[in-house]
Amino acid sequence: MRILLVEDDRQTAAYVAKGLTEDGHVVDVLDDGRDGLVHATSEPYDLIIVDRMLPGVDGLTMVKTLRATGSKAPILMLTSLGGVDDRVDGLEAGADDYVVKPFAFSELQARVNALARRPPMRSEEAVLRAGDLEMDLISRNVRRAGQAIDLQPREFRLLEVLLRNKGRIVTRTMLLERVWDFHFDPKTSVVETHISRLRAKVDKPFETELIQTVRGTGYTINEAR
Image 1 (tube, one colour):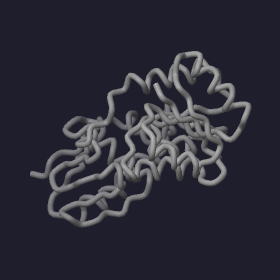
Image 2: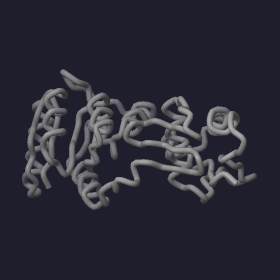
Image 3: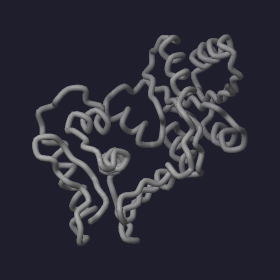
Image 4: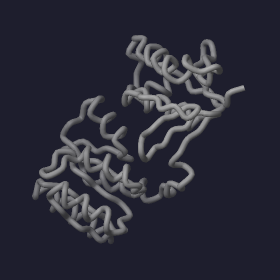
């Protein structure tokens, strides 16, 4: 694979580049987010590895900009910020995976290989729909019946998970894992609170409800009837 590595820590960049090169990949190394954007949008890369804290343009901004310009290349984000909110921010910006520093190269290698096996996003997958509700994953715009809906990042992620599973039940546990990266029950009403806020924006102003509660199980989103 041809890989772009944007990392301003020279020791980390050299360590990662050496390992990937030994694996048979071609690696271009840059230490500035602005330069990374230029290369990522002008050259064909099979994978982009981005440090979160970069000079010029930070990693989150770089990822958001790449997705906004239509880049579908898999993106792996490196960071020393390992909190749940930090990881969620990275994924919501458009990263496909997240590795927290310090890390073993074997972990990075496994994640690179997993992303390499992932089929490329087809153009039609850039837009998710249910009835008259439409979510553009590139521009990150949501519209229903032609009307723009302003969602907060976690509301956007919550709706995205429901739309990707349209017609199927999504349990509370699944939402905790996929939206908040909780692998345990925090014993709070965080899911219910955000579902209520999402309904107020997506369903309440319109004639039909798309988001349904499956009592005792979870939630589902269906075509408007």
